Image 1 (spheres, rainbow, N blue to C red):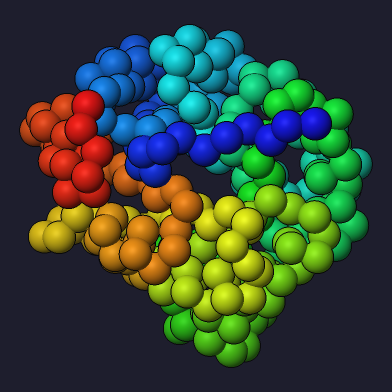
Image 2: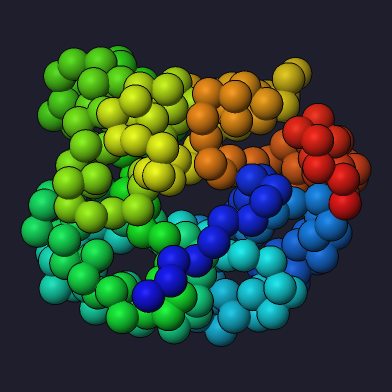
Length: 238
């Protein structure tokens, strides 16, 4: 059984749009300068599996960011359904608990190549002040470490974490554990609704395996040039 490899260029551009035409246009424009494409709930809800397949035809690795979180049986069945799209990465919520995480891992066991199953720790739109409102007490870092350890123990391939937690999670979970980092913004970019952010170079230096960049590329006046500038900063030329 082989696991889907990560691209050499670690940048996954987030195509957060309900429009298939816009997603395809953006993806085609930035294709020479990014490693993969992230398609999330907004796109999946509007276009379904057929939309994912249409974007995948461009040939770039797909990060299917669906963040499943439900009872184990439901998550297991959902993952089997989307695994037919052959994404490189798929997300579930690490806070779904041990039974859900193990069921998710088992659901993908026979897929070839097997997508990397990564658990979302703490959304980058949250910070320490938000945690009590959802029943968590203690710093964001501690919660991310706890959920990262749970994901590792349950056989997941990695987690999604903010730039602030990369170093601690690498120490906790080891070199082979995939760390996917959203909340990445080139220097001078607006943070929008992200609260725990850093630059692409800093995220990679801290130990990220893949970084997710959305609006600084997709909402730029020239997305292709924005993607090319980030690639050049990281030492990749398209």
